Image 1 (cartoon, helix red, strand yellow):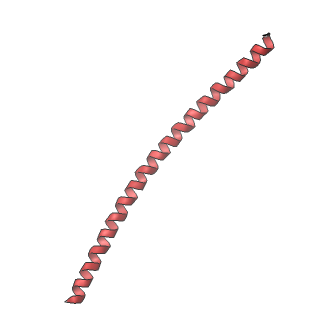
Image 2 (cartoon, rainbow, N blue to C red):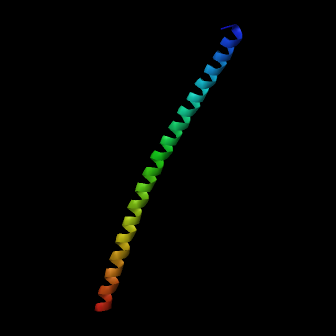
Image 3 (tube, rainbow, N blue to C red):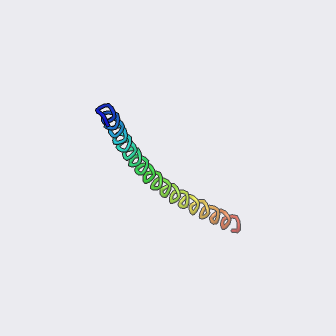
Length: 68
């Protein structure tokens, strides 16, 4: 291997290191985003369930009033 080959290899290794660093950061960002979305989904499911329960309770009260 001559100096030119070594320089090319060094350049390629540097590019690969940069690519790995970028992909690691992107992966972390995506994992953080996924965690946030899972948390948000859980909160929305809980709110939906609470709203459903309140609507069902109102319907029962209306039916009870209707029967009186």
